[in-house]
Image 1 (cartoon, rainbow, N blue to C red):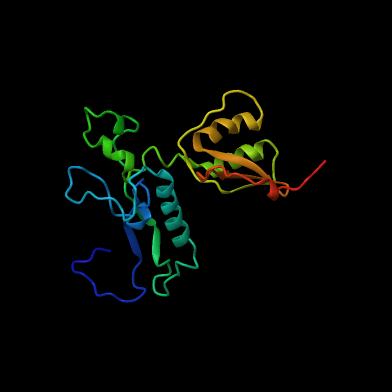
Image 2: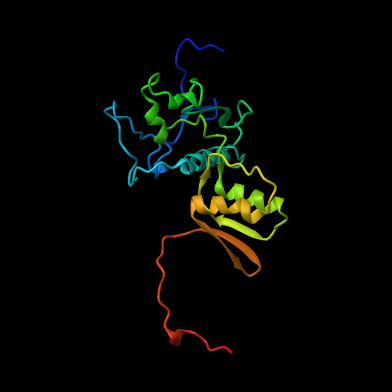
Length: 213
């Protein structure tokens, strides 16, 4: 139905459209999702408390949080007037998907001068196919028959990973462990995967140790 003039707001009268949601792939981007880096723009700035490092995981987590929260009927009630949810999830538009073909954009700099902005920008091209490190490690464990594992303390974003040879899970996991800096530790019968925290080795005094034959 086309309206010739703006209509007055009436509670539950019409659904809400998210015409633009997005988060840059940069450290602490969720502090200020609208902030971006572009040397040619006067608005170029980092989100609050960001160190400026690339972070594609936080971009994915932002989108997961937004879509899962508003996709839950508990948080998105149905209007008593038009019988549909308050937020139309079919009208959620993510900033930004680019019509330029990936990976030529952002890699062909002589054709597109804004290619360098992709690294820490809002683009989801080439990123929506990535996966969390925890999900990749979990799949390797499941395929090898390991059920008692914990990846809740494992953080990282995997753009792509190929294990071309038929081998055991340890050899498949080792390149990921070296690349992302995490360990596998046994705790009470559970294999716990967790990132290294950068803590240095400490000296243990002999008085702290128990004697054993």
